[in-house]
Image (cartoon, rainbow, N blue to C red; front, side):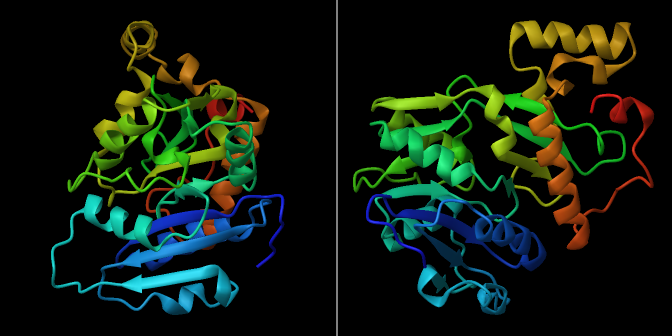
Length: 274
């Protein structure tokens, strides 16, 4: 583990169960982070032994905790176990089924280094492993920030509610009362939320992220039903940095055989956006 006296220690908190291939991608993202002073805390309540997946990481950089799979742990409870196991000055959610740019930790740690108590991304890239959307990533925005992208200072009073989902949205409320900052949508490429069919939320939840403001809802109707080309909606118009991140995500995912619905080639209207 590379440790620097002038860089706060960051704990990346992962909750997982029986999803080794998805976990491999998340660990690959962790391993290539440019921020050196970090650890990965993995809370596993599944039946499969995931320890071999962690063997390529430095032993002193990983905390792997297994829980009884016969007990029905809700997601909020598992996240609290991760909080308890973390030793970092900064903590960040690091889900097993999303993709992270190599500079994510560096960028968010810099915001906390400037004095913030917590920060999150205003938006992330969204990708659906579904034929019609496969080559059309888009930006999903939330006014208060994307809960799963949070990085915050160690705080013993901050706890997740014992809920099976939306626990991170409630958790975010605690930080909205602190010195909380949003990274702009131009940095959405730092995080790709991935719909793969086994998510906590269904595909409809992912799709609503492109039309969750009045302006974008009107634009959605216009492009989908009047123009007949949803992919001209502004949420699909992404930056060169975002395309570069998306292409890296595609390579990572394909190498790990994670896609179920990849078309043989990208359609012309997707390539035209690059």
